[in-house]
Amino acid sequence: MIYILEDDASIRKLVVYTIQSQGMEAEGFDRPSQLWEALERRTPDLLLLDIMLPEEDGLQVLKRLRAMPAFRSLPVILLTAKSTEYDKVLGLDEGADDYVAKPFGMMELMARIRAALRHGGQREPQSRTYSLGTLFVDPTQHIVRDGEREVTLTLKEFQVLCLLMERAGTVFTRDQLLNTIWGYEFDGASRTVDVHIRTLRQKLGRSGDCIETVRGVGYKISTDNQAGTARGE
Image 1 (cartoon, rainbow, N blue to C red):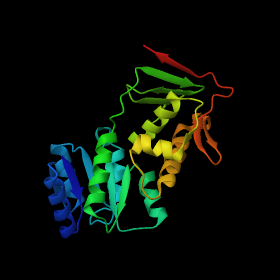
Image 2 (cartoon, one colour):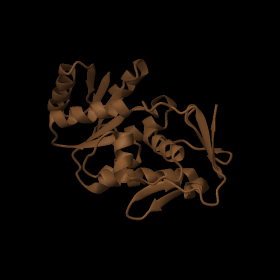
Image 3 (cartoon, rainbow, N blue to C red):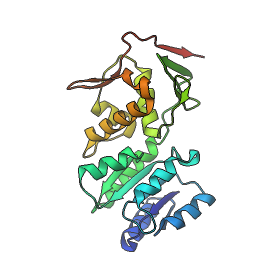
Image 4 (tube, rainbow, N blue to C red):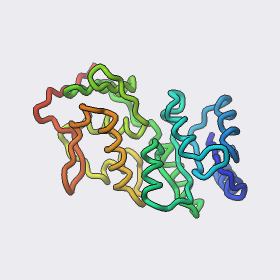
């Protein structure tokens, strides 16, 4: 099931029709209060979320969703008429998985939806835990700690961290991270990766120092002067 929160009736009806014509379930809402009621009845597989809405804007809806454990890993694609890089980065910073700028084509939208569904938490969890200095990660239990402090991450932030920890010391280019975690390329790709790395560092606190920028290349987990281990079952 895919939910669409979009107050423009013509766009909402067209998106619902297109999704249903591809053999998927879809339900549209024109205001956030309707979405919150629907979420009490059923958790969708993905949410298409407009930013400019009555009652509360889409970024506020997204922020509330990410604060709820039940919806922390729900794939969310923003539908936005705002085309500036700042607005797109702001949405990604709040935990969106992707964005589609209006006006958009239905084929492009369906490609984004399929990619989000494929990569929405479907990387197989590794049956091991990782520790590096003050950082501890348990992919199976979805646990991240900075020392004794538990850290809450969005799904994409968590997937990026697990990938870097799994291959500690290996440099990943932005394209490699984008293709592995998001599953395809889109405009603003490098900024998407950069935003997630930035928020990861902020949320990890002192442990965030282990994420190293390799100038002109990408990112890696630095194991220099760290007691890093990976423990299997």
